[in-house]
Length: 276
Image (tube, rainbow, N blue to C red; front, top):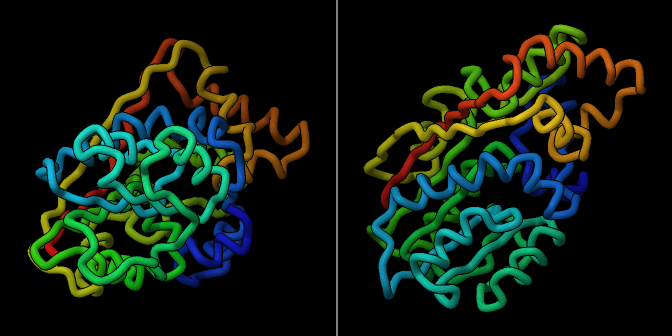
């Protein structure tokens, strides 16, 4: 995501450290890089997230901030490619979805300005996206607008503030070696109860908050560390702006904090489903 896309798909303006964090966001990367970095978590998360809806033949669904297609794939499995639309501000991600699912209506777009008529879908999902929206309330309100009355609007965000995200160990190491460095804990929806507050502010009703948890296995420390060097997201951007010595220090601290390989990383996401 370029800075232009950050402004479209970032978080609300906040304290200076949060603003610095926003400027570090980068998803203008190859889909394969994202898959190696976050895909190992988002793929199993998408399975659980899709199960929150009673998906069935005849329904239509929208995947907002689809990335390379982790959730899109689950929606296609349940509804068929012709019943799924997907948007993302990153052209490389949209092209990856088109290549994988030619019949899916995939195009560049942002949550705050959905190019669909009122009541176009039965379901609107936003997996790991709300904390990157410029205006989360407007984004959720737009999702409700394009969903039929009684349809489902659902979103989930990693629990960055509660220390249960896939990146918790990484950001702990960053803070150990660089006290005061910005992280993702202040992102919209990333702390307990905040995602539900955003849903309420967007006018959504019958909120059902829950938590989704996945576990990912790593055979070596290198298997865990290498994706952080690919420049994906705030964590990748942080690593790429370090010099070699600083990167070595951070890598060593991460190794100290993690268990001896092989090890597993559990990650939890706040999730809210509601009626449009």
